[in-house]
Image (cartoon, rainbow, N blue to C red):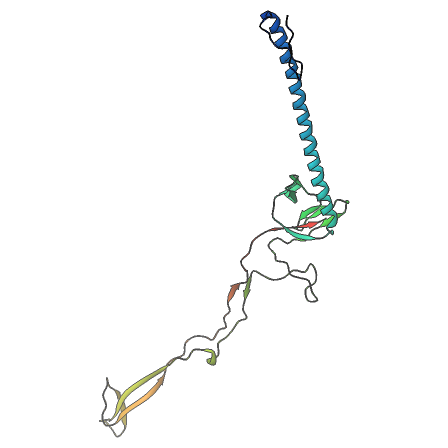
Amino acid sequence: MQDERTPKLGLPLPHPDNVLEQDIVRLRQAFGTIDTRLQEIDDGISAEAKARDEAITAAATAQSNAIIASHLPGLISPFSGQFGGTGNKFPIDRRTGKPNLAYAICDGGTYTAPDGVAVKTPDIRDRFIVGASATKAAAATGGAETATSQPTTLTTAQMPQHPHITTAVGYLAADPGGGSYRMSVVAGGGSAGFYSNQITSATAGSSQPHDHSVSTMSPWFALAFIMRL
């Protein structure tokens, strides 16, 4: 029997001079060896991939921890992302896909910081942030979405110019019954004794004050605020 083999792995090869039954046995041994080697290669690749993934996760975690450590507790910043954890109150780190428990949403809730201290976040939902000053203490609130002007009553000087004049036209005629005169209104024209006078119209309105309600909201884009616990 001819016992030829592959140069690398030494696997048995069939030969024309060999009996078929003998080569079949030898080929089965070769395929068994190949299967074992392929499994070893696959296991090695899986182990390498797992080690690589663990290294990437460890690096991302270390980087995240370094960033967190550099953030002063109480630091507040806007966040554009998703939330998870208990009650969906903690921002999810897109690098790890897990909620970062060192931060919490600013909704007025109380959360446990990494060092075990209970920390209450300010409620900044539906609010703008303004810098604290001598007239606006830190954590103070104020403002409104709409504003109403002070009641105002227009004066004569504030009203637009407009006329209120009615002219009555007539003539004076002798009263046939005596020596007095009466005024008769005519459609037009004029004659001896022509008479013209201004008549003041009746008043209207009650001079009540009025105000105006307007929106004070600028165009906005909503983001969640998170705080370093």
